[in-house]
Image (tube, rainbow, N blue to C red; front, side, top):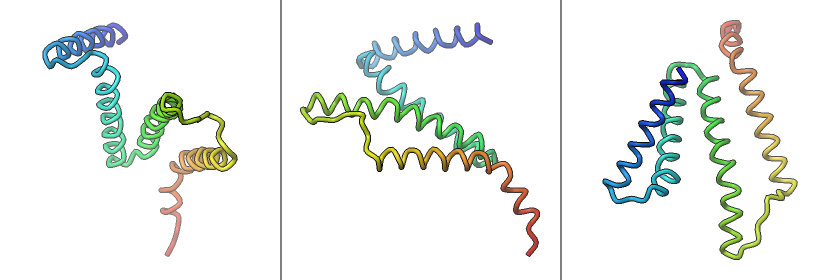
Length: 127
């Protein structure tokens, strides 16, 4: 399996280099901007497909992984861009931001732990 992935990775790299030459777009733009956008779009499409197939635990896992990847890149990027623009920024978040982050982590964790048991809760209810 590793050999197949290595071969496919080489094919993707060669294809990106050929596309860069053919389209007249810089290789940096394709690899830094276009590839992550397409990759995240594919992740979100998979999350939607899993949700339609009623596999919400996988869907939430994919969506959370994608959101985590974006946030770990975007927040430091905003700080660096702010520094370049002369706007003082830091990664020192206040009490409200830290509390909201902690609450969202706890809520997501609770949702992922309780989610497998939700169908059983509805089946056992008598109206």
